[in-house]
Length: 327
Ligand SMILES: [Zn+2]
Image (tube, rainbow, N blue to C red; front, side):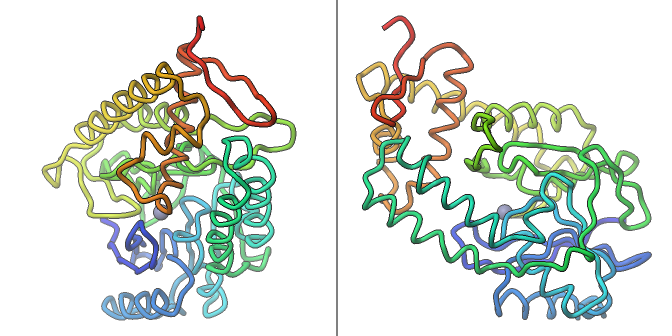
């Protein structure tokens, strides 16, 4: 059985988000959309087209803890008996979403954005704009939240789907793969446009996770799968059945990342050592207020160059500086 794609509005730059419906043997949703009146109305309308209401939903399975994917799950549980499932790595986002978001904002404000060399006024502007994202989800009662392992198995549409942990865009991201029908629910790991490796608050004393190197390893894992159809978290399905092979999508994204990584190294070699200044060079084609996603990508290129041994990092007055090795 194929998942049915329901497209819900988000009001975010990313555009609408895909929620997938399995109608039989029991109505299951993969992801829930963002919490907003428009999204709620669109979900009810889309379900009605399949002769369902929110009350009929028995399970909601979340691919990764970003608000455009889980935000509306709390509203669904308030209007149904549905349980919500997520990989154990992301469960805290469902029960304590406001607290988790606040912790990320605090990390950005107090550490990360200072380390990349932003001035206080810019830090205030960036984090002020992100505050509202914390309101785009409702907490879910803990007794309604269930977890699966990063290598678990889920029953959807009468078939067994393998959970594939694909850190990168989110450290807790999971894709779901159905080997007999060769279908992949790829969440925000494999999209037709490269997803950004979101910088997360490091856990305890552990170093910040290298999200882009992890994303590329996760791409290798997905590239090795035998796939007929890819159902992404945003945009239209693709894969051999839809005349766009996922290998072509992956190869194009990897080539672009390698090219941008080389450009980043060239800027560093020309004497630009601080991330805040590198972003302005690398994303000069974006207006300043839209460069934040660029910062996440840039941090990713720096992580790749560090892993290559092409650059080294030094912290000077609390600001990360990157120099070509051998300088
Ligand atoms: Zn998304």
